[in-house]
Length: 393
Image: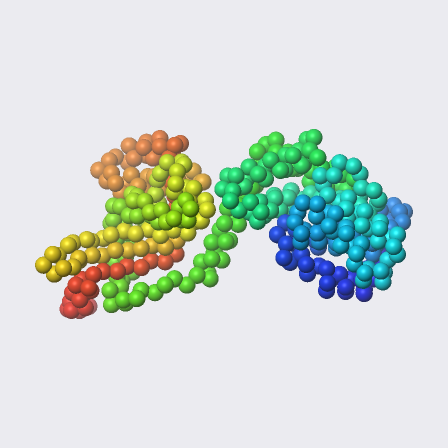
């Protein structure tokens, strides 16, 4: 296969492709490089069949096909074609006629176009832009939704992707394949099968869960929690955990409506670095957690007012972490059973099992993964601790 002109490639690599770094993930550097590779692969297969194709033009069309995104997604194909045509540097490699052909190809590449592209280069880039690898389609659709519709909840993001895939790739959808391409034909068949069986929704949920987990891990690794200002009143970690295990109620604080803090008292159970709460399947808490999983949970271990000293003998713990709705049925069941064990210790295991199983259908369970814990006690209790005789080993 003929190599792309080295000076043309150098210009595109240095001046045009970096523009994609500022675009959303669905139209970013990875996408344009995929379209370039797909275009050249398609062109090579057509050359084998005896067609006449200018590979420099194929490459250039792929490079410029989405640069118009810089001015917005609507009519970006027209903006991209205009950019290509007005780029004076391209005159070094292409005639006026060739540049006009490439402009038409870029303008015609959009999947929603119902008429066939006006020339072969348009059909090549259109087919290359399809890139109907089902997993990549799911990722790009979800990425686009998160970047351009951040106000949507997780369920709404999934619904948006399902509707888009159905409208574009489903039976009777607006996407057309303009060239024979077994890879795209197989990908389209798989997407339609996923739509029929419900597999597409599962794929969207799995991708979103993975994306959220990676985001949380990144935030966690870069987050440095504030240190206690009064270190002498710090409660040792083992006692903090005892308060979490022994406490019967706490206050969950999340980012509520209108960015106002929303703090709600809850029953809870603490198990192996995680807190579990049960609640209704809809409401202020769950809406808030869809916007941001970051939360804190406060438990008061002691609160004794001492009027004669004008003070309070208190101990409290605050846990910081990420809270999310549990989707896994077994984990939900185990959390409900643990809550039943804690709050109904005299009940029989069989009745606890019945309650845990019976309420699962209409009860939501929130998992709060603890990332940081602080504990503080009143000055008088801290002084008592400091003056207490050391325990002999």
